[in-house]
Length: 213
Image 1 (spheres, one colour):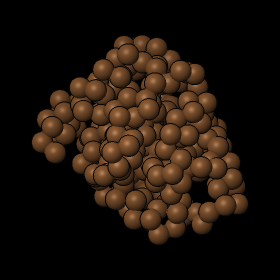
Image 2 (cartoon, helix red, strand yellow; image 1 turned 180 degrees about the vertical axis):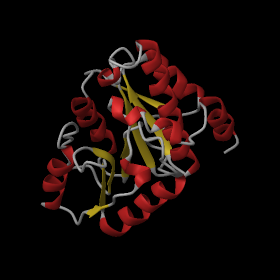
Image 3 (cartoon, helix red, strand yellow; image 1 turned 90 degrees about the vertical axis):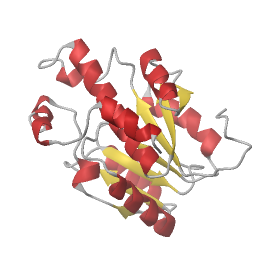
């Protein structure tokens, strides 16, 4: 159980799921080495985690990977163990612990993610109860705010945006938010062509920035 339970929730919660690095970003294997993919995943994770932290979130990393977990702890973030190596099963298990508090699930492969975008998600979430941020293709779900996760069933993967929207609209007012900051993700070789245009900083810069907050 997360250590902060029982002490009150002083900050909003952000859960960042990260696959085991051995399996991460497999669709990039035709253009990147295994080591290159690992470095990319860690860089994107650090970027997302630090943006969440500077936006005032309590950061929880959900992972089965030792390196990711150690990195998270070094940054002062909490770790939730993924015992399933399956995002939806792991989230289903974890969300039971957070069923009564607002939380935001952030898939940490968003190079344009920024503080302002997360603050907008939180503001809309408090007003509407639920916010979904899809990817550019309106297929996947990149960011999801839940006022309560009590009845939510994670369905991440292909076409998760529509599946999540249909599920949640039955119980909650839902706001759909589409911005470049939350929609641009790195999943395919084509996405890598955009990376030189992005200005998110190196992990070292973000570590220093996070430690200052």
